[in-house]
Image 1 (cartoon, one colour):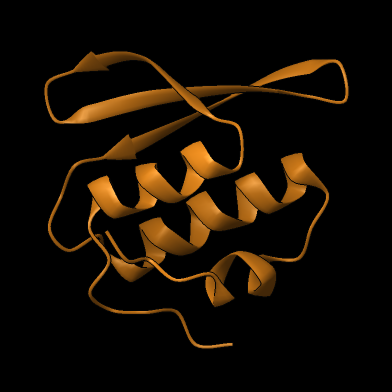
Image 2: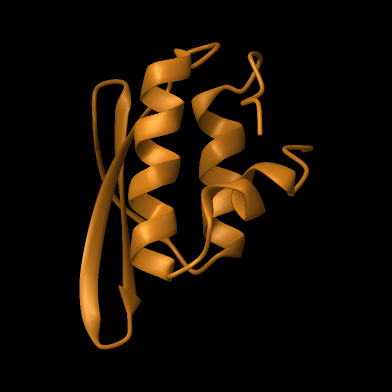
Length: 82
């Protein structure tokens, strides 16, 4: 599935919060999110850029999909709305 081209970091953070991630710290324009999945703690860093580069978005979604045990397309299909 094709990745959206107009996603910003804040929209991605909102989406990941619905999936159980919590912001644990911020340094400059990067926010670190933490989630505990299946007894293991996982971290992912999200840049607060507008828009996110497609390669960065793909890498973040691949990492989160692996952590959650879902396919990346399932994460892409959810709306990025506010």
